Image (tube, rainbow, N blue to C red; front, top):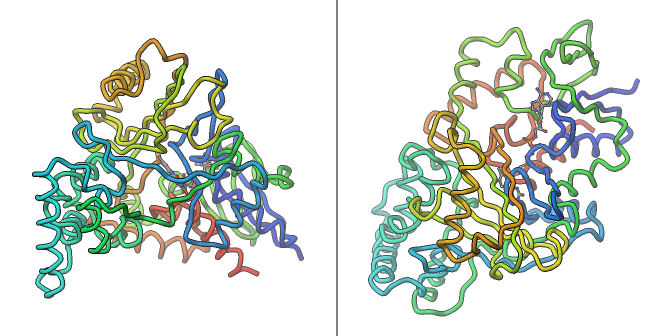
Length: 438
Ligand SMILES: Cc1cc2nc3c(=O)[nH]c(=O)nc-3n(C[C@H](O)[C@H](O)[C@H](O)COP(=O)(O)OP(=O)(O)OC[C@H]3O[C@@H](n4cnc5c(N)ncnc54)[C@H](O)[C@@H]3O)c2cc1C
């Protein structure tokens, strides 16, 4: 008997799962709330400018199987680029990661960074630094007070919209670049070094923005995807799962959820209070993406981190027309600013037009454009953008996963697994899930 799998959510995770199961001859139905698939990996083209609506995306991975999968599905629709990323530190463009660009700092700051880095390194080698109890302690123990105070702490406070001292440190290894001491010393005296190397060359769809990755994976399985279907209830009845949007019902023998846990919870009628409390306690950030199309050119920078809130509310600015030559009209360029926020804060209360005005003004002050060059603007907001690992995360997620496992509901993807997963992590989870079932 053929088994039918119901997949909740048609973002990258849901579509990859469907593609993999379908290619093994299995029956699948993807239920996606929106009218279009893609989730955070969606893009829009207006006035000749293509922007990613869930923040600027690039394709990179240490995982060669996953990287090949992404590149193969895009086939010839991809361009390859060498990363040229900067950090805006007091109007100086410092090479990224910061510890690989120290020579660009004013001499006093450079001394502060290298002196504290070496002191910390020596202490650590002597075993004098206790294991970090939170993310801030990890930053100080890894980089020393100089790099921490000048860049790592302010930048992380800004992107997470949450104090690093209130965040867990369990996730940082492999995510936040940990520098070899030789590289930091070389960079301080001006010898070129490269950090975070698995990302130093990346690819991007030539046409269609990052959404082209998801639509390429969906090719051939379009009939298995139901859009405009917000799952509102999920029940196990007479040996099968039933998912309903209140009007229509789809049935399956097993179910994989890739939708945010906060959306899955109200679909079930048997969630214990302890699990409900754990889900409500999970922290996440939203992101607002301000898109600016200009006449003329932008510097040859891939993207730029901005730790200083006074310089801009945006934590990162990307230049997508440097990723592909097809995402802006000839003689024009695109700039994408990302601002993280939480419901109820200052940014969440700003209108689109206030956000655009702010971003253009800050871009002008940083010297990236003049008002007169702007020919296109748009704003997109994503409610679920970043998982924030607070100190209660590990206990909350344990309670949640135990419950869903006992229910027989498999969780895959960024806000279903509730992990800081990039695209490669989502695809890896989908591959493992399908392998375990075959
Ligand atoms: C600012 C930013 C930049 C990023 N940059 C990169 C990058 O450069 N490289 C990289 O590899 N990764 C990057 N990522 C991560 C990447 O976007 C995610 O890993 C990936 O898109 C997550 O896919 P997903 O399918 O798990 O989740 P989602 O994309 O969130 O998909 C979930 C889907 O479920 C649907 N849904 C929700 N509720 C329901 C419901 N009740 N019923 C039916 N459907 C529902 C949603 O509409 C959505 O389509 C970035 C993320 C952000 C926020």
